[in-house]
Amino acid sequence: MKPICIESSKLQGLLALPTSKSLAHRAIICASLSKGVSVIGDVSMSKDIEATIGCMRALGAHIVVEGSTVTIEGLSSFSKEAEMNCEESGSTLRFMVPLACVKGTKTHFTGKGQLGKRPLDIYYDIFDREGISYSYKKDVLDLHVEGTLTPGTFHMRGDVSSQFITGLLFALPLLEGESHIVITTKLESKAYIDLTLQMLEHFGITIINENYERFIIPPHQQYHAANYNVEADFSQSAFFLVADAIGHDITLTNMNLSSRQGDRDIIPILERMGAKLIKTDEGYKMEAEELKATTIDASQVPDIIPALGVACAFAKGTSHIINAQRLRIKECDRLEATRIMLETCGVQVKETEDSLTIVGQDSLHGGKLTSFNDHRMAMSEAILATRLTSPLEIDDALCVRKSYPHFFEDYKKLGGQYHEC
Picture 1 (cartoon, rainbow, N blue to C red):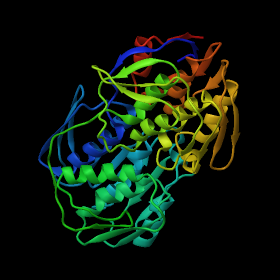
Picture 2 (picture 1 turned 120 degrees about the horizontal axis):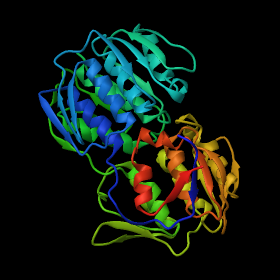
Picture 3 (picture 1 turned 135 degrees about the horizontal axis):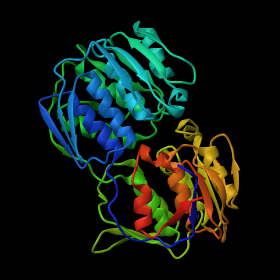
Picture 4 (picture 1 turned 90 degrees about the vertical axis):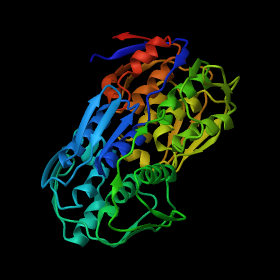
């Protein structure tokens, strides 16, 4: 796709959000491990979800996709060998590695983009301790794994990606003995662990949670088939709620305010900045006369920081995004990318190892930007562009297919204006 030029515009109208990628990953995996047939409804297909479906098929599950409905007959036994293409999905990779080791499946993991640079040292340490053989290439995902996990105690720091903990929580209930996961420092991204525990319970798995410091996993458990409908994705809502907060008029028709998704925190963060959540006959929207600067702890909401950076750019005063170290190992270095995005358009930004300081501006201009091949950066840039005094050029905008393939179609329906440069 050629670079696109996005013009300033007014976004308004009704929008049904895509459904949660985080919940869809978890539901598809649990259903695939279950005895019997499960139906997962309201799945928004994307490259990441397709990757998880492909990997569970490789492990032995029978999966049929019809529109937004995924029908899954759980695997009766684990494949002896498997080729797993994780595309660019860090969630898929980190969820699959422990599952490949439940019954010693000889597995070859491949992927694209920055996935090979995203750390797996936590699993490598487990492999070394358990005698699981593995080999990999630096900076590309070409990982071979063969061996079987044994029950035991697994120590993990709380500041690592919760995806590693979730991967073990999927696999350990299937082992022959009791296992413990001990969290050695304060757990970040608790909400993602909550989503995992909620989904495991839905499919019949028991995990004993001792205040997020220790998880006790009883042995010999069986996943049980269950139907599940996926709710709207709060990480995708962030782009449109921020758009509302900076002057647009978008009503989201399918938000579940009782959701356990961690990115639901977009609402109280924007409220702290002076916005209000308004209930209408059709759904919910944000309104704000003026945004004010705030301090945002990125440790619990890393995925919505680029969108919140846009809100900070138009807020009165100086905002601080802190505890943001993990943004550096996403699809791109999102901390650096957010700084570049804002600086390109005239925002004063200071970047440190784990923080951004953003000085809000009354007026910002366009320029040329890369998407950094990162879906969340591309969507944040598109929202930013609506409030600029001149066009913003973005290359490789098709990277949104990773999580929200129809983003630019929805953007155009709401009044967004763009064309090939």
